[in-house]
Image (cartoon, rainbow, N blue to C red):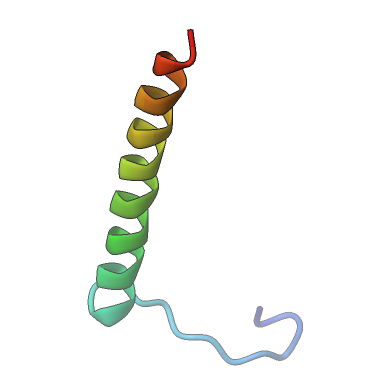
Length: 42
């Protein structure tokens, strides 16, 4: 980023990590739901 002359800020905690955690949880639950639904087809 610095080589390109762009400003950036590394965030480890805070709102961004909460949002990322929410979407990770949503993705995991969606995969579980999809797997259970797919198992019924067989």
